[in-house]
Length: 384
Image 1 (cartoon, helix red, strand yellow):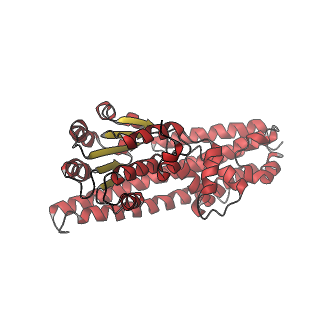
Image 2 (tube, one colour):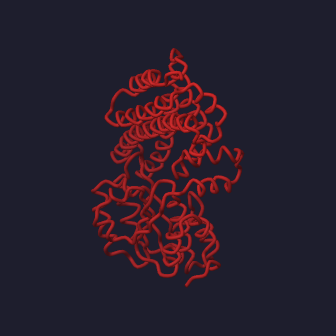
Image 3 (cartoon, helix red, strand yellow):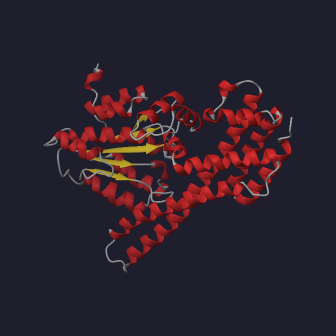
């Protein structure tokens, strides 16, 4: 059996909270398969683990293993034998999968003995892309290794899944996520703030980091403002607009990132005036609109989840169950507000929020839905 001391440092760090995945990945370093599917919830560490495995695969047989490992671990990586693709917008472009993975997988390594191809958010591949990838998965070159990363592996074709060795990642517990947040460089928040964010994030590292960012702090405050205003009957300031503004800003930022990435892909087509370049530019514009909508929806849903968590915490405090509180860093405010809230009203309010989250998935007007929610909350949050 491999001893802990023999586990590569990057791989050990990436799988610190995933013992089952660590066992499978250590075995992969010694005797790698041609294809792996990293499957598990968002924020569980799949991306870091895939990069660590890629670094070890490329270090093996390289003229300078340490240098090859160092370059492979960089993001973005300058290693010529590591191809890492992310979806442009909500889907991978078919041409990108064909050119950067399928066609490139037939070429021998520039350095060392192996080439590694990583497809992030593999479930975002259209069925056409997945079918095109099948031959590469069935008959790979001996030096090619494919790593697929997916939070929704069921969205992949069975024919794709069956040709990959699956490495499963579990959802992080709040304590594990809190420890991750504490260990990162440059942390400035308090311990109680990290504890609250770790509970609110539901095991998702990316979501926890968002909540600790300036944008996340504003989103959380906007969510609490909605409850505060509804409880006091002060809805004339339209507090729901804070949630909409935070979601809109997130969508704009995501669009800018997509357009920057798409511009690089468009450049590969050559002359800006060519038919191919114009086609890719149109695809990039469409992708930008799609991703803006997706990110806006995700952030708005997160904001509503924060509203629901605050209402549940109010009910918990009123019931004397402070140990169940998620917003542990806002205990004083919760206690003061809970004194004037009916427990059943707070619970009913949380149900109304969840109903609004479901309604927003069927393209109802966001602003009207949030306005209606706040006035409904005002009705159920009756004074004790």
